Image 1 (cartoon, helix red, strand yellow):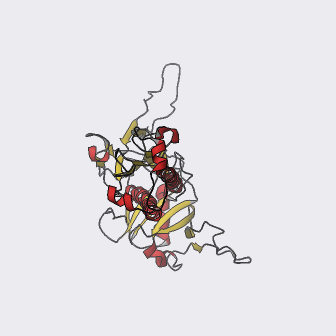
Image 2 (spheres, rainbow, N blue to C red):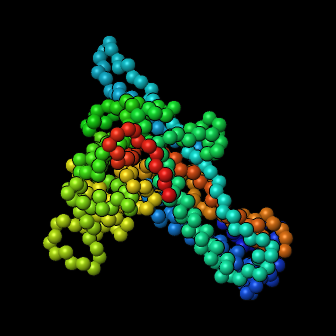
Image 3 (cartoon, rainbow, N blue to C red):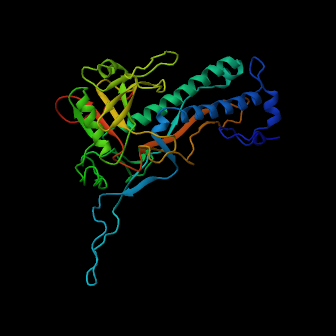
Length: 368
């Protein structure tokens, strides 16, 4: 009996392993390898589900495509037609970019001697840390790409020697120019110098209105999402400066007819802010360093209007535990792999990134 009968998707063992032998072999506390492998399979599947349920996943859609292709610029539309004259017309202008694909591993260092004496609890602790680290990696990669102003290129990012992963509209600072499509009912036309990486002095109502207007003018409507640092919560909740801020209502508290609370927002939000372009929910995270914040809209995981794209092998997010050992212990040398990459999605104007500073240009922050 081979282990293929176990129908494993996330734990990849040598095809030469025999299932009956795995049932016989056990850890020091008596747990069979067959039960252990199946439990690891379940744990890795749950890890992927937890990531898909995370806030950062709601900023993304998932694809197995190498890159994105979309319209750029082009202000010419319908033109007046007569018997002797026809409009000039124009083929749609296209732009595009690559999405990284990177292999990450997590060394467990399961040696023959360690497995010989291992107890189930020891392995469970390591798997728990593995799951936490996978969540941390995904969240960091998503926010890192969102706030990063620089392009990424080369085989290091899994996009070939000439592929380029781009930031959101950067004022023409990179090598890949992009002109956002016109929005005549809001802001008219744009050019390749249009920039969504801003330096604004102070956390104020005027600056919040300004940043959200940069998104609104491309056809986006609220509710908007503002991601801010945990370290700056006091500045964001200071209604002297952010006059439109309203605190989140808390479950179990009767606020009566109070109108200065932001309804029953999810617990991940500290509140919201009323702006001239609509309401924005505010989420605080310790991953963003002080002085930085972002404005986006947000949907469910997989919504192609989300600002970021996650590339995987088959369009599905999955961790795998891979082992090629065919020795006395089935999991000797096992290595968890997590393969994915994060890039900007179909709309390069879908996010606004802000650094709180009085002078100079935007500088990419370090995401923790």
